[in-house]
Amino acid sequence: MLSINSTSEIFVTCPNRCQVYLTQELHDLGYETIDSTRSGVTTKGTWNDCIRMNFYLRTAAKVLYKVGAFDAANKDEFYAGCKDIAWEDYLDSDKEITVQSVTNNEEIDNTLFTNLLTKDAINDRFRSMQMERLNSSKEGKEAVIFAFWSSGEATLYLDTSGDTIAKHGYRKISFVAPLAEALAASIIYSTKWKTDQHFINPMCGAGTLAIEAALMATNRANGLMRSNYSFMHFKGYDEKFYLKIREEAKKNAIHSLKAKIIATDFSNEAIVNAKRNAQTAGVDHLIEFELCNFEDTNIPEGPGVVVLNPPYGLRVGEESDLIPLYKGIGDFFKKKCKGKFGYIFTGNMELAKKIGLKAARRIEFFNATIECRNLEYELYDGTREMGKVVSGE
Ligand SMILES: C[S@@+](CC[C@H](N)C(=O)[O-])C[C@H]1O[C@@H](n2cnc3c(N)ncnc32)[C@H](O)[C@@H]1O
Image (cartoon, rainbow, N blue to C red; front, side):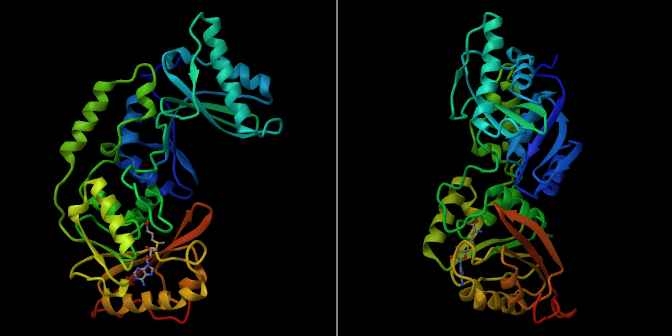
């Protein structure tokens, strides 16, 4: 029987196509990965490993600890399989439980039904053991159970995160089309940026990319910005271990940068919001914010990256109006960013053609349901001819 200290399979979810960056993060934390899909990576570990993952991973959404898997062709088999799991090893009856699920089954295509079935199975098991019934909630603020039921197979997990860890807790104020924080972290990992180099982010919007870069450069763990996780509400939660991880993370945080992080936008509201978000993240003093057109951004000497996430017509602004903007980015790269790597994260490949430079890499991403690319440009300085000028991508 599994207990909270047993090693089990852990499925860590991430934004669509970010599994490569999540795999790298898991390896950096010392975890071998067993398998990966477009939306998650399987690894192994104990309950305390889940605590570490929740605390440190920047590209993940949920850390799911597997407690059972069984064949379930119909609702009776699902209920029976679910009731067989030793929930009393994980759940305290004074805690609220929330069940969430993904269901893809011929008989049942309603996740609410799966949630109800799971709760019934758990409560019936508790009743048969003369234990108190569990209170349930839709909020997900305490113990969260996750059921994945697809093609006649069901897997039950303890969702050790609860609220998604794809949100990093600092973005209290948004601006137009902000990137999800875990996606922004993945975009940065996909670049050639090293944390001792300049990170320049014109068109910064709510500041997500610049703030993520500052958190990475100062080795500040996301967990330092959060105080509640689902793992705290399961039986056997090792609070001492959690506090040790927090202390370690605080000690390992660096307080100054070796290079500049610059964030600019031509909207005053964007700059005000980005500064407030950076303040919440505790990195506002590390980022140079400026209200200006992207092409007036100060580009310091030395190695680094220039990363832009311009509007791309599908979500903000109209496509034809944006043609001059994309042409302008190409000119800006050619004239002002020599010696850097330039990146444009966009969901509009027609507009990308207007940049007029040939991308060295076109890195695949999804922003929610929109297929995107992070286009990489090598912007050679005088010694080599700069990124070949082309009439279109
Ligand atoms: C898609 S949003 C960037 C979102 C950002 N990555 C985030 O996560 O919040 C595009 C931003 O480009 C800015 N922008 C558009 N045209 C600009 C220009 N010519 N110069 C500077 N900023 C511009 C907008 O004000 C907007 O904040």
